Length: 638
Image 1 (cartoon, rainbow, N blue to C red):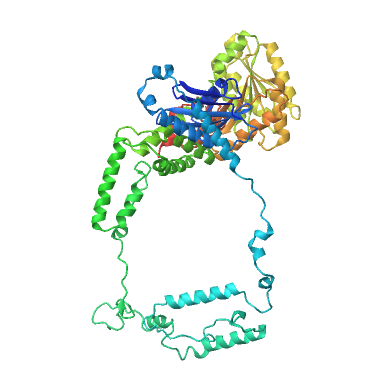
Image 2: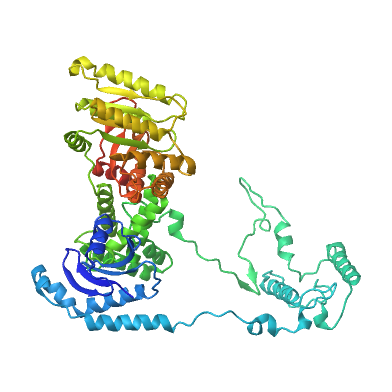
């Protein structure tokens, strides 16, 4: 049973709605718009919101969205067919009203579609019931039951009939296909032809007799047969080609018999060699460059190469008119038009370090967004797809929720409590280094920082933070801030419980009046269950204001795996009813990748979380905020 089915425009006007089991569809549809449509994540055509599964279909020609919702525990096989049928009927029935009326007229207009929808729903449900359940095939109906028992018994020294027949056919085909110039139609006896005499000819042979017969045939073929060769054998052309070697004379007269390489004849008629393709000799062909790609170029060139001169002229004119037709935007885009362009775009994204699955979903989302849309005037398929992909990438990098740490810290000051930030990530990504960079940024903005050394596992972790705290204190000494300590390291040594150390650090910061607490945790792999449980315990017990995942810009597919498993572990091992997940991303080592910035796309796409900071070097000043347009420009650069 369906919960609801609604049809609305991309501008937000609801044209028609069917209420089933659910009382209201506002919440799930708004979640779909906010999380999928506005974030350019429409590659799956399916979205899960709480206990509902939403499936949708986009009509880019009329700017419409068709959404159906049902309980995710149900398996409704007719939903896809229902959406297609409703889309087709609604578009054809109200085509004139949608094209001619304005937005105000659509808002005040009525679309009487209830009876048509109920009819389509009833037909879809009946079609799913008509399908009979698949039953197991009985032995009596199989091919094996139809064969007699006698045919499945194999006698010793006997060859299967199928192999013998196939060998006869193959040898007969070779005999017919031999094109020797001296070949004759004389038949070869069965004993000399090398064919085995099997039980199908009424003769039963033992194993010893078969070996003796084969031995005699081998001696006759390779012994005396080489001395007394018959002119009708198929190896005559080979002997003819080896009689005289080719002589390359620098000058003078040459032997005509030696240098006779005229066209061989078969049965008195000369063999005509196929004409060589002049275009292939000259090296002409498709350029293969991304910016010059045309969906119809390969088909036009193939037709031109395989045609004669008049047809080539016709194909050239057709290609010119087809190009002009694409330029002026006289037809809507289809999947076939965008297929080759999207393949190039997908390979380009993967080469720029975007995860393979994410690249496929991005191209699928762009295809769903552009399918059925009319191209603009003097625009090609390549430019249209590229522009849509750029807009999608910029939209993905734009965060759903802006993380403004300075504003949140000032809000925490008004409530007289410290602002707590927890850093997590895998080993060696630069958590401690970027924690020091963020500490320097906060000190420059006038906030006091307490660093909690909760990495009690790695040797030298506490000493590293101690060195950073000493350097930062030298940059911002207490005498420059009225005797107030601006940076302090809270440490308890190694081998202690990280969650307990973080709790004590937060309490110490509250008593001493520190503005921010930065909690450093030990690096751990995403598959290590005990360490992920300890991290979930630290976050659940201390409830930080911000959880930052520190990831490298060097990784591709691994970034997706890390983020997915970190989020899943925080949700599975948390003791809270609403577990805390990752709130933002710190992307490190961004200065080592040149223009291969695909990891930023992969991380933000998989979690919908913003990249708060970007690390670009080894000094305290090498901390940047993400510029979405600059990243996309580097990503799309050829």
